[in-house]
Length: 112
Length: 111
Image (cartoon, rainbow over all chains, first blue to last red; front, top):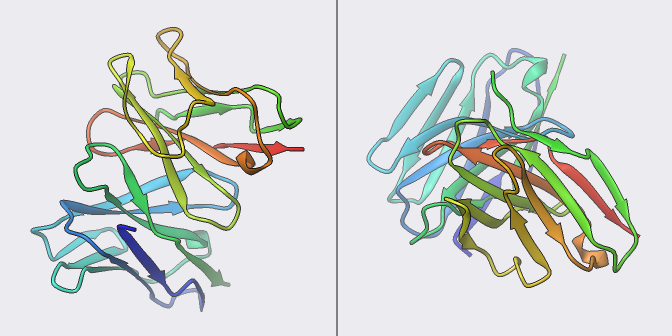
């Protein structure tokens, strides 16, 4: 498959700590996106990083992309209880304009 | 902020029955999508729809599936003869350009 795995599968940290999640993929990409899914809710787009970018910031989110290693990381700084959710990376299927290919996700729990 | 809305939130159907899942995309969006997520598994692309026709579909989207945009606001997914393995969360999404906006999903339970 095009998509590798996210790791860790689950992460539990104390509120205020930083959370780092990783995503690997297998083929060339144009961009990589991160989404959040709260329990029982839909997927919310967080950030998109293009293949020619190495790092991108949005508020408390920092995303890096290493195309040589085919991996990306999502860092959430100063975590809050509301950050508790599952986080997924997604890439566009090769030769597709529309199909997002998803990783298995990291379940993040922020303990108060 | 505009949202993609999906109804119903939970649908329980007997195996072999037809089911229609409904979605109202964001009003100025041009591209529409259906995804599914079987419990504990990855999100999977089913189909994309643009300009009143299917633009791409996955191997999952076989002859028992169909999509329709019957009017200017609704976007539906029909499963003609449901199977047990169709039990999943079904997500509708829409986009104007690059970012896809998702609804909260319909949980489909096939008995």
